[in-house]
Length: 560
Image (tube, rainbow, N blue to C red):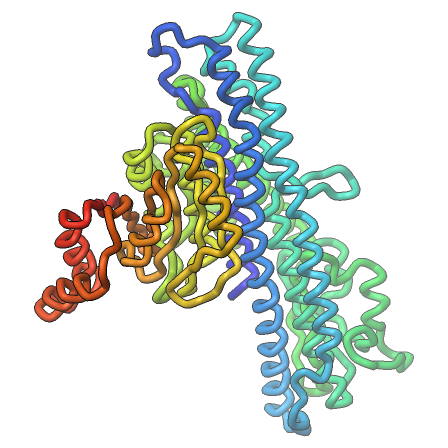
């Protein structure tokens, strides 16, 4: 786990949130082909769906922040332990006394403070992200109405012009004191890089304290800011992370910090300085250092431009606008590549150019740059975020609104359970007046390979079922198996519900209610017959269900 991995969580969140917003904007994409379609129809549908949009934004954002919260704690604890081990090894290499047994954890209170501050710092941005997505979309609807009613634009053109500012800015929900805004993924990386550096400095300081060594020297970086340039490569006494005292010869780390050294996002570290042994790297030329720093800042600016035009391209409804923004993406990408060729000391970072570009001018609407998670129960995100996956879900419901509600909850579920062998469950209306509305959820259980319906969920499901409207119950299967007998038999408690199982490997099964309870013995007989010959658990389960489906009047369909 690295701070970049956690940054990827927030980048994936931004991609998914904007993919959802773009799908909402593009409802009735064939509007001009529809006979008699009017602007008021699009507007009415958007206003009706606004409440559900806000609910989905909150749910998706919360699921990502909760996942990131756990990752931050794990990451910082690992960083502290790793830094302690590194400092121990360095000390032992030069004959310094050994750290006493049980040293790790002696300063856990300091570590806890850093971790709590890091978690709270990121968590406060949760509501800023939700507010930004909601206010940005509401502002888009207001502007779209103004442009459409003017009579000067077609509906697609009005939507594109109205959404321009929202898509160009991205999820820039973090505002600094000077009024500058940055997007959540960039801020998270900066904040976690800062926290990680603090943890490393504290770990090294704890080891130096144990050894009674207080002299430190910072590393030398070729592309550093003017503030840090004055302090890098200088021997100082550490009176911040360890208990060093002034000696009249060396500057104090506290003085350097007061002057701005080791600021947020700073890449400098403090290392133990041993007289006569530690070699200080040669300081870079001042003029060269300033040129490199300026070049790096220009690289960041170009990356922001590329990301901006990708969002605009992916959100464009009018073909002419889509083509125009795609041309700008290509133009800035070429300019960026040429700039890196002219400055070989700069490195290209594909993650900073997300959302991913296909290179063929086609928009990546509803696509995510998330990579598949490794491990037995890791989620195959490229497949989950593909158009084929969305099409599969759409095949079992009669509206885009129902499909959107199901896909959103599958995304929440797989985000929360990624890499785990546990499950959670949601129920939504799949048709009728309340189509897309959530009925209930069970998300607080951690039983391996199972999720039980609690009293609250059962009560809500029963009340919803009495309305007569179709319902879909959604849950995940970490092993990507088809619905179990329990899944099928539980549908007998309802009259209007069907189920959907989302596998971590990207599979989706849809299943309907049996006419009566299916006995375990019959299922196991068919399962064992197949498994003895083929040794494939998933295929054996599919075979057994197919054999039983006609006698018990249900269907299990593998959608993808």
